[in-house]
Length: 488
Length: 101
Image 1 (cartoon, rainbow over the protein chains, first blue to last red):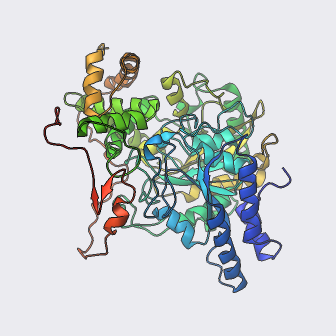
Image 2: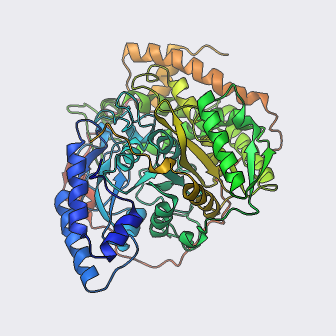
Image 3: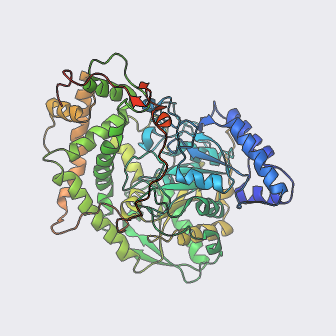
């Protein structure tokens, strides 16, 4: 993997030292993406011509001394559910076939404004509904560490692209763990910021009260750069937090003295997770203690209800959001339908995959007359209790540390026939979405050659503390530098 | 746990504007039971008096000045439509064919 793409920080230094150019870097990324397409399938579309043209413009800017930001001229991938003007967005679904966006997502605008170059769109579970990137109309993405394993999901293409050193960084979206779980499975850093920190304008909606755009990279410091480019208030998203993007990089001091880390006892129960995963996470906690952090046991008593709460809320909101895909304004339309209702029904049945239909139907059921109070409203009430658990925990600690996922990357096909088992893969991640709090996953070891992720959660609005902890951890460990050998 | 009938799945499918094959309906009826059984664990929790959370971060509803801005032009708005005429979306005839409403 000697030709693997470096980190954003390494590439920035090489550009500043005039050892390389944006055109050369972007060209290498594009070649790696193409060369790994058969074996990995991380991308569903590349913008080779446009990206190289933008790289030339970035090189010209740098030549004039007009560098816009630390990521100016550096390549980034975006998940296939955020729009860019003039480019396709399909959400890995047949129902959006042929869609070309007339506008650009706020987060992608942030990348463009910073001078970053979008090289292509990454594969995902259809409409971000899944934990393995197997539910894609384009076919699955494979894990760079082991081609028989999934990369996790739903942002599996972004995680795999960063892990395989095709691209230094990528955007993903996280509704119940869709950034953190694939980051864990692929051995990269993935951060979901506080709900509302990054605008959802131009992100195809799945579950609007849970969806949040975030970043993948190989280091916490790189993630900080990306977040600085995409975070901040946006009047086009009424749930956007009315504050400018914090200067995250300044918080990465490498020092953990006096920091209190909470260990939720429910997340460390032996029955819940793979023994090797728990052991790697406990070793990571010990490293953090040696670096000066104090630990305290905390309790999140409603943790075991998180998955049920999540699926009631996420499916209900999805059924409502996905009503817009009706064959009228964009995407697929069934041929030869005799009336409007038949056109709607056939279009949607042809256009959506099995998992998306399953969730729309369950969500419709939860919202239908007679069941709304028993399911949707009940889940919203339990959501309040889950939030309260975190508020109490953050009364006695500055951050929580847990496993990101109960296991390492599972095999392709292992869980597709049992959806409920697939859903349980998100058992440690969904609570952060329910509570709206920031959380990241950073590599903390290996079990049988597959990466393990350490999840670090912070209180609402405080992405800086998890980033600071992950950055300090990366200064004293080298798990994040391990490189998959078998891919590309 | 209540048994979920095929008729119940068909009722929900119509609400969601999905048409299902016989095999899909059978499979979904079984899956509904599994999922609803799982989600029913929420009923163990006493939530009397608990205020529901609609959004996790409490923000006041934002307002902005009511100033006209340039909207997307009609041509761009219909550019992705499967069928369009001038600046209009074309759909199958609605009157006389809409049985279920």
